Length: 480
Length: 68
Image 1 (cartoon, rainbow over the protein chains, first blue to last red):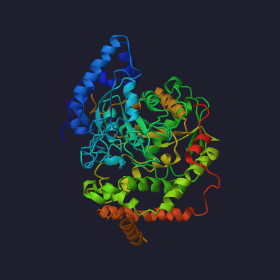
Image 2 (image 1 turned 90 degrees about the vertical axis):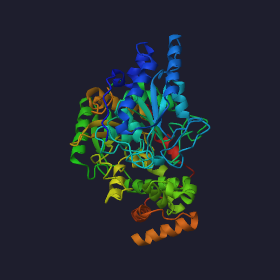
Image 3 (image 1 turned 120 degrees about the vertical axis):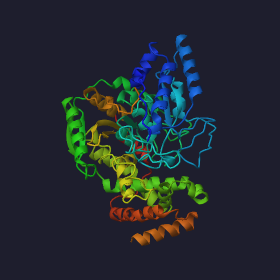
Image 4 (image 1 turned 30 degrees about the vertical axis):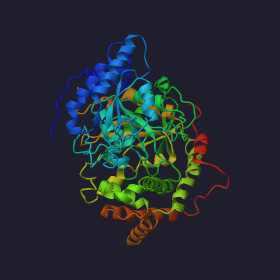
């Protein structure tokens, strides 16, 4: 594998908020930021393979336009001039959108995703598209069509998926932030495994208009970035009701960033006594425990709590996305099953065998189970925390179903065991880096709040990052 | 059980959706549905449909953060 060359560019070291502030103050130009990001991709991405397509000329032209605007005394919004790149499943009118697949390699949507529109209206420059699991359907980052995405902390290790390129590109300091999507952990897993911060908001919080569907009951659009503050800024821009997505919530969107004051005194953090720590790797457990001590030192309190109905949640969640995925892919599964990766067509196929009565049972229990969580958990704690991934980061080889690796199906399935239950609950969940394992791969903690409690979980995540530097550590392969 | 569930999935996928097993991984994932089926069996009687009209979205509102 080719080793990337180092690019000394302090601009790539900035957080998204620092880059935004630099542009706003006239200390940095959007063109400089965009060139630095493009150079970083050029220098490092041959090894990591996080990008699918970069729109160089268009991005630089947009950056020039934004610089002219700022010099004229106008700014578009809180992301003015900052380059972003996104998982290749967000539609942009007239632009290829592969969804990481062979089937959609020539697909050009005729309209643009609301999340992309809102980010660009706030002044961001869209640099291009990022690698992902085919049709967002695996938790590891394998991709048979565009090549696997490699973890910047260790190229033999998986990045987590399905937003593999988003996690890897942010970790490698190629880009300041990226959209991912999360149906069973696809934002939080690459965030945890690549050592960055990622938030899946409450189900319905962010419009899904123009986002490739995987499972219409559990899909979420959200950001990955270097810090909780970066995520707070990005989430505020994309959250909120969208008439083009009638399933999006009209709940008001708070100023998440303004509430990041480091004050978490009196917050009660639940530590699940069941399920989430079963068979946890001792190194993961140790890092998690240390993270809780940091939050306690800031004034939070931890208490043990049982999470109700975990057997039901795990049974039901395994049905919903499989059936909805099979429904969405039925025509292609009939007509061109050979064009999917082996693991994906295999996974989709099983969804056709689940009876509708079981699918509807799984959907119908979601409300009662959420109410039980409200009564039995959130009446006692403000949030609950778990490891994002309870095992050490696996290698790409160990989880490669397509290569017929013995045990790969089990290893692959184990990756998302702590995240997918949260999608069934519909809760907001943020993953922040909290250490490294003995292989040098990151460990993450995920914090869940009540529905529409994004502000609270971001406040905890930000408070944690004020006292730790895990999120500041850079892989050797990182730009700069 | 594993062979039975694999056969059931094959029949249902073919009969209702005209979808064939694409590969051995598909058969392995189908076999894995045995665990899901056992999960449903264990849950019988634990939870029921609610008599009154409701929805997951309503539950999100009922349980939401009051001081976001």
